[in-house]
Image 1 (tube, one colour):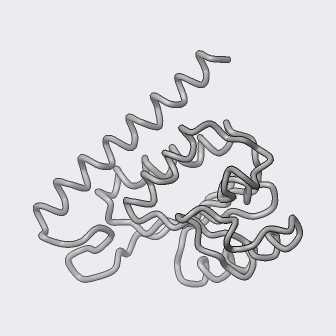
Image 2 (cartoon, rainbow, N blue to C red):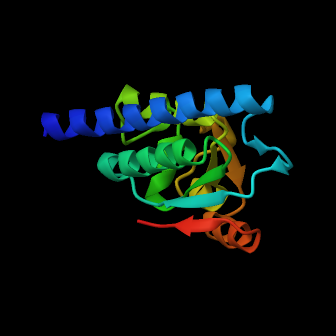
Image 3 (cartoon, helix red, strand yellow):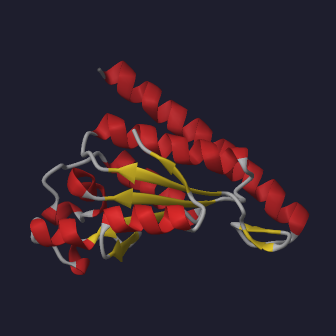
Length: 162
């Protein structure tokens, strides 16, 4: 089990390092901000569905987001849409029943620094009786995770579900 956890960490960190290095090169070469190509907002767009609270599932999605960032040299708009049990990823530790390892929170912070948006479903929040004040700073509340998936797909986002 510890070996699997360390393997997941190494995989994620190597993907994040690759994304960061590619991003730095792309930004320096273009003189542009992150997530912006030569002509403005990125044409590459993806939304990941995150609707489970299992740490291995979450790590796979965070790793995949880092790989996408690296592949597109950070010229990609990424949303990780958290709803149902997946909302726990975005709940502060004091209210969180999942007690994720610090490493998971660090990955969320790192991806957020690269422009990844973490959408928090307000419908799920109402169900579990948490408020915006209970969310981590990287979270962006949205009316509904399902509605957000539909809206983003209508805007041309590729939809990734596990």
